[in-house]
Each structure stands twice: as structure tokens, then as C-alpha cells.
Amino acid sequence: MHLVIVTPAPPGTRHGNRTTALRWARHLRALGHKVSVLVEWDGRNGDAMIALHARRSHGSIRRWRAAHPRGSLVLVLTGTDLYGDIHTDASARESLALADCLVVLQPLGIDRLDPGLRAKARVICQSVRAPQRLNRPSSSFLVTVIGHLRAVKDPFRAAYALKYLPPDSGIRLVQLGAAMSPQFELEARSLMQSEPRYRWLGERSHTDAMRWLGRSHAMVISSRMEGGAHVVSEAIAAGVPVIASDIAGNIGLLGEGYPGCYPVGNERALAALLSRAETDSKFLRSLEAAVKARRSLTDPAQERRAIAGLIAALPRGPGLLQN
Image 1 (cartoon, one colour):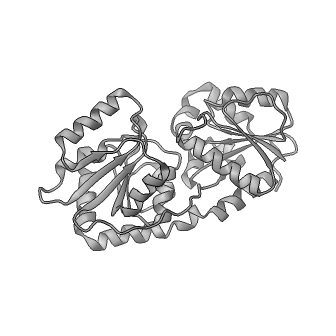
Image 2 (cartoon, one colour):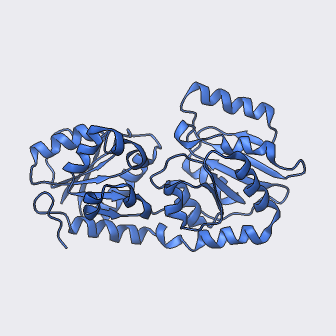
Image 3 (cartoon, one colour):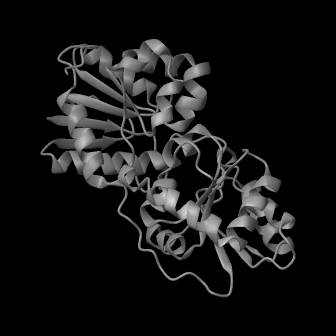
């Protein structure tokens, strides 16, 4: 088949939507399909469209459906979709209706859909190439935060938590990711001046980010909204303990009852978990064991099989999924 993937994230960016689109393209080409990855549909022919982001790809979705009333259309839902746009934005909701199949990136995502849409939804977790687990520093307890600095990520929550740690704590917090506004850059630089245990490295290559992750004693993901963060899958694959905000996008990947979750936005609770991870080896081992128990979710072979099954089940006509 010739498959058209539409993602609003342009070439050269490291946004999650772009990463997902390119990874799906690799899987689909390995399965023998021809794949075009576009920011917007340009009118080219294809057997099916796979669109990421209900609101931002709505124009492409609508034009594709008008031109291909019986052509297959898959919509991969992001965190912004599931926990925001599809409940408030008319164009996002129309995208849901136009799609033949909906894909969510972690199991709890389906719960955010209206009951009438759940029958055409599938869960396909994001796979990763497992980062190498490296030797951790012996002189400090290294914690990383990896992701671009933007409001939805609540990017400085771990940095704010540092002031609640005991004075003798050996925690060192390293943050990687581009500042998505001048205000975020100013805040990061200000925090480095006021908090000696905090260091912001800015945007780094994926390889460099994975080295930092591999060396970490723990990783923090503090987001207010996620569809299923790729960096959480990377931490799972590497066996790095995760301390996470208790949003559905994180719990869906880490599992119900995961012991390392704190109430979103609560830096005191986050500080308590960080301190416990540093000082209580049994607790840290429990986080590591819980993360390792989820590794199968990040297996590339499993994701490829799921994508192959999705393509095989695409409808011959809109709304008629084949079993």
C-alpha cells in the first residue's frame, strides 16, 4: 500500500509527533509499504492516511476524506487531543468522526473517548531502542528531566522541589530540552543562579540525552498532560526508575499502582519521593522493578505487529473495520 502520514511537527524538529511519525514510517516500510511523511496533505494519491493530532491535522483530514470518501483514515491521538482539544474544539471532534480508526498511545487513553467512539479505537504503545544503562555517579544522586520547556510539561516542578530536600541531600538535577519561549529560558537561567543543585543543558542530541538518561539514578516526568511520553518509554526500556506526575498518560505506561507517582504540580510531594529514592534503597529497587515489569510495552517488534494488524484491519469503506 501507499500510506500518507501527516504530522504537524515539521522536519528537523524533535517534537514527539515527529518522532512517532518517523518511527511508524520505518515500521511500515519494513512491512513492505510505501510511505510519505508530510506536514500537510498535498493532494497526492494514497491508499490510506495516518494523521497525528486531531485539531492541528484537521484540514488535511477533512480534505482527504472529501477526496477519498471510501479511502481509509487513521487518526493517532496525542495528549493534547485526549486531555484537551477533543472535549472543547469542534474541528478536533470532527476529525474523530471522520476517522475510520483511532489510535491511542497508552491503555488509559481509550477512557477519554466518548463511549460511541471506543469501538474504533486501538492501543499501540510507542516502542524504543533501549538506551544503554551506564554507571551511575557515586558522588551524587543524579536525576534527569528530559523534554522541551513548555507549560504543558510543568518543566520546573523538579527544580522547585529541590528547596524542600534535606540540606545534606546529594541529589543533582540535570534538565535537557529547548526553551520554547524566552520566559522559560530566563526561568531556567535564574534557577541555575539560585539553586546550585540544578543545571539546565538546553537542547541536546537524542544520543546525548540517552547517555544522561542511562547514567541517571532516576528520571522525573512532571507533565500536566501527556498522551504517552516517549521519554517514559525510553526510561522503561533502560530500566531507569521514574518519578512521575499522577496523570493518566503516565499511569497508563507505568501501570496502575506504580509507587513513584505524586500529585501533579505538588513539588513538596515530589521532593518527598526524590528524597525517599535517594535514601531508601528498597524503595528505589521497587521503582526499578516496577519499570522493568513494563518493558514489553516498549518492544519494537510488538509495536510493529500492532501496526501491521492495524493496517490489515483497515476498512474497505468508512467505518467498517475488518476483524
